[in-house]
Every structure is written in structure tokens, then in C-alpha cells.
Image (tube, rainbow, N blue to C red; front, top):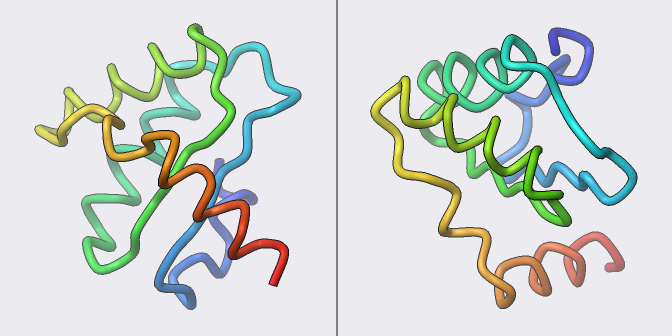
Length: 87
């Protein structure tokens, strides 16, 4: 998780695309979606293309940190995130 997060504090929005990822471990999810998010509240984290297993781990990590589940990554936001990547 530390490598994935390297220099993310330089951005206003970070998009994690889990398209080819079937599962992630609880420590990975916790480090990114609870610890880092709580330490950097000004950064917008969006997770897209999550399998049900990945979404479950992310939601557990967020819940442990008192953060709302990743409901914000709606289809519209996913489309916006992908659009931003193409530009």
C-alpha cells in the first residue's frame, strides 16, 4: 500500500481502478481507505471497477475509520473519473 500511495498527496483526486483485481487484503484496504484518507482529507479518493470482494474490503476499512462507504463512486462518478483519465 505504501508504494501505491507514494506521492498521492500531490493530487486533489486519486482514482483507483480495480478492473483486473479480484481481491485485496484487509491491511491494504485499511492503509489506503482509512489511514491515508483520514490523514489527507482534502484528497478525493475514487475507487472504480471494483469486484464485490474488493468493495467489501474497502467498505470495511472505511467503516473502521468512521468514513461512509464508497457510495460516492456511483456510475456517474466512475464515468467522470474515466473521462478525466482520458483528457
